[in-house]
Image (cartoon, rainbow, N blue to C red; front, side):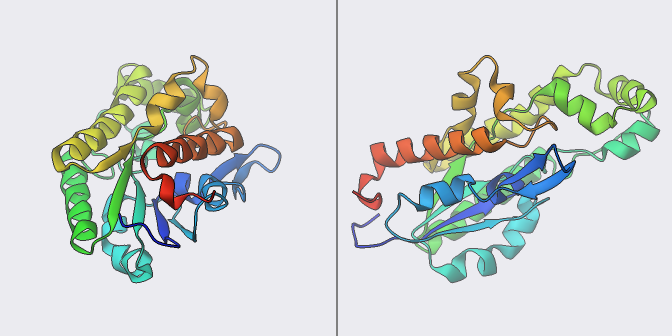
Length: 238
């Protein structure tokens, strides 16, 4: 990246990028104003556009990338996908655990789509920066997807085998992001490792066990800013 007076950054991903948290008081999801993109925007020379969307998968992201990202002519794009891609239709599994089910995006398609997104960004002289996934809390997330219904819990557990499989499966998509970054020499910010430095990392997650809460969003911002300071200090305000 060349040194200049101001930079345009786009954060591209799902509800984690959007800054969605679960509001316990209102018992619903809400957008957090102080999300990681708004925190880093205060420190960057130039605008940070938040192009995160609730429920976004990488396939949808790839389809919308021209309008959501490239049209803004950014210098850098923070790419954060995977949480919805690895997810299953838990309602269906809860009803019938003896069928075969596929995730929203299988890992091979996830990998190929990520490779193609990186290629498109680099071809347009935009720096892609991949982000690993914050870890989920398998116990909280299991309760969430079973909606505290004992029948659903029994069926989902029968299909899963163990609750820990939720963690390892989600982690396999995060590992794929790291692998793709290494293969393509693409910049990577390892958000996941920073969360896992805390044995009680679940304190950074909402009740659903997967969305970072206010503290979690703040931690993501800190990780990104520390990375920028070490590698792209020139884009930060003095």
